[in-house]
Length: 218
Image 1 (cartoon, helix red, strand yellow):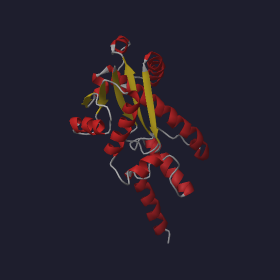
Image 2: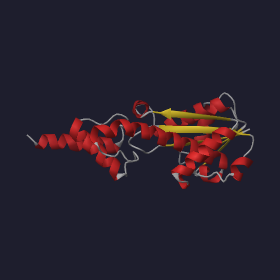
Image 3: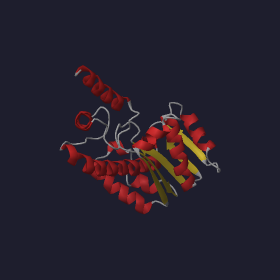
Image 4: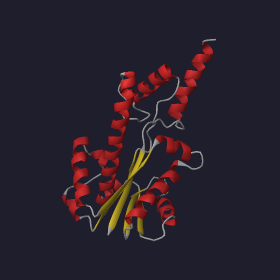
């Protein structure tokens, strides 16, 4: 039994971090269906494959960590430690014999060791950078994580966009649509919108700029 685990949404200033894991007897069906890194697939193709993966997998697990929880955890741990904790929870549920993970740490081996240290059982651990592009089982996990995060962001957008009549964007700091949305929201409501990671530099900068403009008004 092999499992793959991956995340989606590590870097965004808005929306959740999602970690997914998936278990198969072997990766033959995944190879046959050309499963690969979710970032290299169109949204439509990801949705089709996510449905198929859930149907043919022995088991799968998806963990959604909301922005507020990320902010709370960052008071006492690093983002890498948050990911280790999340990967550990997902792998505990799957209990594979061999597990492949996409390393979030610059040190691939350390990331794998840190996950193993939180497990009561000890699967064979393969921790690699770009594992979602190397191992189909991690590619499958990346597809589940990405489609779930996209779903969560759509739900957030449905609620928040009505209040500003502006598109939310992807939630990533470099997205000019997201930047405009956050700045417009702060301008109108004097606070960051729900589901924003307030501990992110992007969010803090927007609030700081708002404070400076207020001081300039005096």
